[in-house]
Length: 304
Image 1 (spheres, rainbow, N blue to C red):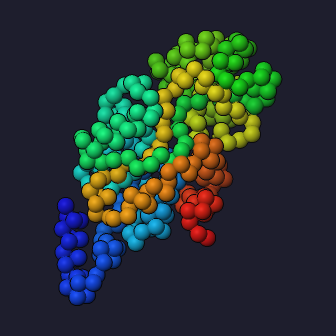
Image 2: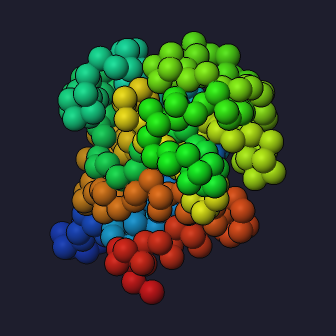
Image 3: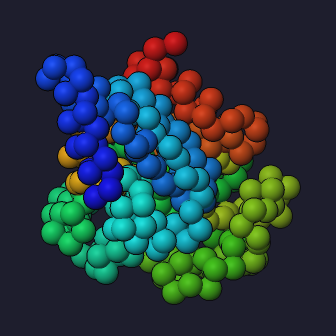
């Protein structure tokens, strides 16, 4: 409300000074920066920079990023409701389950996205703008040499040879009911051994040959490597986490043209591309803003 009052007062002043010819776009350029929030993970840092770059390139507005909000959705959503942030990258099933309180598998993906928009409008005066294209969900990964040796393409293929392989997963995934146990039950898996591996060491353990199979996320940086293969979830066990922008409707009203700018993110990223960008930051040590800018230039969204 303070931003709106400030903007209106400034608009009146400019219109008076300019004899009524000051444009709304010029007024908005002088208003408060658009506030972007991100969760504490590399992927979100990159996406936040993409949103900032697009907003500042396609509109006359400035944007500021608050990176790595602890607790992710559980703390960003209340802050959005208070107007502390204007928008942030969010995942469909996170909004569906954590914010709206639904069961993850209640509806299919297309219906979920439409219902997300409807219920966010009704309950929070917010909306979802576009889908980036990638899906950051659970994945089963095997060493490429193992996949080649046994002809593994799908997780169902794994069932026939799992008794010859070692699975290594982070403890919370191995212990949770909807994690490893459900994976075993759904696909009929019976591994030779199961090891608890720290989440940050799983891919090192695969590389050294200590384990053959692990759980991951489809956009993990390490999954862009040639020595790791992601198996198809052919029984559709995992729910999908498609990424989009959640934005306050008040911000869309305050900043004309913002929604069009945000739609530039629609469909620009595949799982593999997101994983490769994560790899550039996490492994190659590149700056997330530089990685984001170069990617947007490669897609023709920004000019060099």
